[in-house]
Image (tube, rainbow, N blue to C red; front, side, top):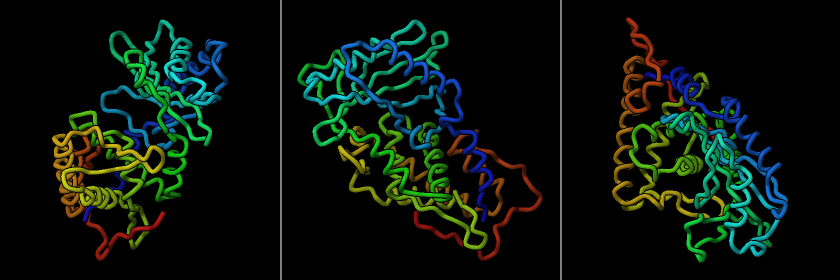
Length: 326
């Protein structure tokens, strides 16, 4: 059996997108925060900021379209009752960030600063605006300029708690393998799923729920191929009727795939079945070269295929894999 572990780890290095791997995005983030501090209206309440999303979770994959993003939370020291129209706080943020080298737009869940090179967007940074209610639960400012007043509301959203919950789910080598597999699945999504309603956080929380780290029972080394196969199989096994439900483990506990239509859900299931079968085929293949050719068809050209060897690369006789708890 091929395990293709070296190739999985090299693939991970190629697609990894984290805080340490993008100096440009770090610089843009620091500039945005400096501009916000310098230019925000004196009428705005004090605030703190924090990183959220895949940067905070260290599960970011370089997007296939080349337009990476970063998520930042801006938590104002006020209550929702102080600003019954949450758009007012979002306008404070937008007005402080507007400059000639970026476009700043208020979207329903956030304020987005987009950077361009010519007519092409190169990357963007999303700033979600929060306040805290009397129970110290963070509330997300929801709405844009065109949103009717009655629909501009505060929504429960525990972004920092979500980061802590997912980060603490695994540790050590288990956490490393979890992150590699999540990034691989995100790249697969970018390549194979032709719609935008399969969110990255949905895949990450699915892994939080059902991923199990796998290791070689003989030498104890990680086996990402087996872990990926088992994880995809577990996702498919969780389908309820025509849909897969993946709920946030923190408030608002919503279904992360709720925006997917039934047609999109069927498409996702079919593509996951194809991925599962490809992973099983690669796992059963005694030749690493041939196994990686199969995997490359699912994960794209960044997944390396080693040179063809005169001898097949067989796994050690009698080797099995084992799971370890987080």
